[in-house]
Image 1 (cartoon, each protein chain N blue to C red):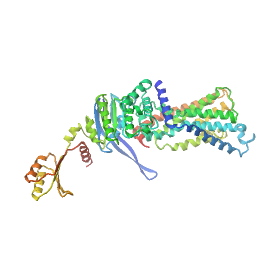
Image 2 (spheres, rainbow over the protein chains, first blue to last red; image 1 turned 90 degrees about the vertical axis):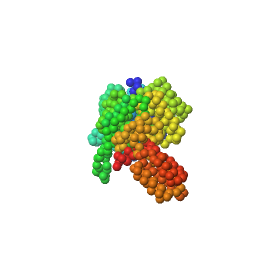
Image 3 (spheres, chains in turn green, blue; image 1 turned 180 degrees about the horizontal axis):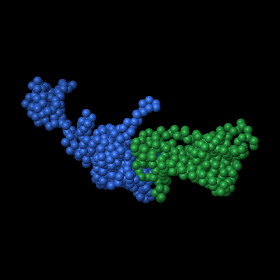
Image 4 (cartoon, each protein chain N blue to C red; image 1 turned 135 degrees about the vertical axis):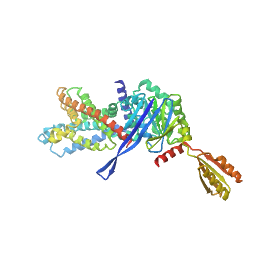
Length: 271
Length: 328
């Protein structure tokens, strides 16, 4: 266990040092979500947003800003922690992937360590979000101090597991970048970042169930906007737990398949 | 001991035929290859490009699975017990890849060391020792991107030794290095085998390097073993012929005739050409050294000798000869 933790920490440190060498990245991290938030907020502006509007059945119109802010926080949090998956091609190009797989390091530790390397950015992003919400938007309603760190943990753990799952897909082929288009935009649309999944038609609701961000956002909004207690979020926590367990199992299965595939085809060196 | 027995590796390659169709073909990279690596010995794996050298190294280091045959390392099967094998082997390749350029040498070694479960003071001490060995202690905290090619290669060596492997695979380790750095590196490789008992497998295009370092050489061609011996024995036993180059000022008909007779008698070949300086260059190749009879003949014809040199076959000639023979 001690060795696994040391390997996890080494992966986090290496990936963080390698990808985040400039402090400017931390500030640029805030600009993009801010632009996305403003775009989404003013997209709603021309529409009737009163109590009798169609959306009012699902969101309190007064909480629209906070709803969008939490949605984009979740999305950017995921984006931050899964970007290491898209950088797997670097490991191929640099030849370092071979050096990782020649070693006996635990493969899951390697994958989750990569995701966790964005932990610092995640903490920074979350801190800025809470500060912004408290000072400018208002409406944060938590039932206890514990709700805020719990919301953070929900986002962190689910994003790391999702990031590990995506990383393993990149082990199969150098051409896996199409997955970015296949998975990223649908996640933005169907996970309830801009619209609550309850407002979706049935088929779209089914798609939304595939993304852990859907469950994570529901939990974060319950904890931070609705003042839900631990008992009230228990079911959602359980659902998220099941989804994450399934993803971990799939990642474990796929990493074994991916390594076997690489050893048979020799595609580890292709880039 | 690392034992490779009847190993074969076949890749399935898809050849595209238009947008939607393609045909799968099988390419045999290594065929029925067997050899051993013993502690303290350096063996060379030679062959022209595409001979299967890198594939062989990757199979031995668990990066590729053999299609058939077995590789055992200290009794452990490299496929079934790959985790145990991984802790005993490592690979160093030539070039500037396999390192994180934005990290320093120390950070690189810390990372790669942790992959082998090393931590704390053990890892720190090993890093310090390796950096000293490869003479990078002064630049230990400089990002690798600021290193010269030679420094990166030395760091590669330190990385390859981070887990103190018993079996080390060196794939063109001096590729593109300047002569003094390559010489220093060769010295280090020799010490690894002789003083630290590492079993080393070396592939290189620099034949002189192989002749200098290797105790035994395996020559492979199109994945098949075509010869195995010491470098000296290989050049002797597989030598085709000795070639004599002689330059003389004039060539009469009688001398020309006698030279051809000499070549004919010994089953050799003769080539005579006029040089730009209007002298004659005689190239005489035969299975035996014809220096003495040739000089006697020239003396009998009272011909002066402007230049004479003998070309003995090198390991490179042997490899090319083997490749030609198999390819024919």
